[in-house]
Amino acid sequence: MASTIVGTSGRLYVQGEVLRRHHKDDKLSIFKAESGNKSFVFKRVSPRVYDLSQNLAAEFAGSRRLRMHIDCNEKEHILFYPYFRDTLLALIKGDPGFPLVERKKILRRVGEAIQELHGKDWIHIDVKPDNILVNWICDKEGNKTVADVALGDFDIASKLEGGEPCQTTHAIGNVMWRSPEGQTGRVTKASDMFSFGLVCIYVLGGGECLLLNDYQELVKNGISPEQEILIRHFSYFGPVTEGLLQQVNSEDWRNALKGASQIAEEVVMEQPELRFEWWGKELGPEVQNMISGMTNTGPMARTTIDQVLAHPWWQEAT
Image (tube, rainbow, N blue to C red; front, side, top):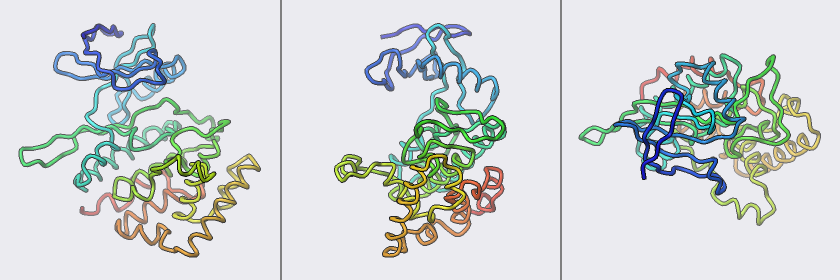
């Protein structure tokens, strides 16, 4: 059934194809829209997200790496976005053989998107493969080439005031892609870098080490997803550091971090191959070095996005 949605610059006649609904609430829905031969997404959001999106669109007008809305309906709190063919998560899951040179292109463009945000003291807080949008084309021989990449979903993005960390009462963003300090609700630019490091590992073939596939089994055994992820990250990237503990205001959380780190160290004593310094060798020495800098457990010791984009790996032949 066709419907009409009015934006600030005219009308879009759309097919009402529902892409996603939230909690059976028709007021918070995402639809795919067709206007002529072009596709769009329109998303009904909360007043808070609508205002946040307006601020971001004003500050990053014309960005080619950040997916800002291109039109809006203030009365209905609807935002219109360009449509992308895939998320990075769906792309890698659907095509495990997707060319390495094209994966590297995607990562570079995501890094440039983060650089744009951090350059104006914004942090994304939810950098993960399903928030990275990809358009690609395929030739007659079946060869796929990336045409466009954008970092999207800024619903929980925040602007840092005076360089101070953003502190929330609870962790925000996806548990699997959060930094150790992000699990405690405290985030900085360095937290985005940790998440980007995990995305790099996922895209380059290390997804099995990162993804939690059975939350119910964890809960049955009395283990929270946050605890499991912390133990994994301390196992992979090294024990809790004093720099990390200094970032955390809560004594309960400091004890939780120390406890997870201790468990991780006991596991690594029996399985030293769990360290990224071992299994990361399969990715190649340059990219292992780059990712190690992003996934340092101490936030202040992590490499910045400028340092990452200047790393020699980007010039390395694929």
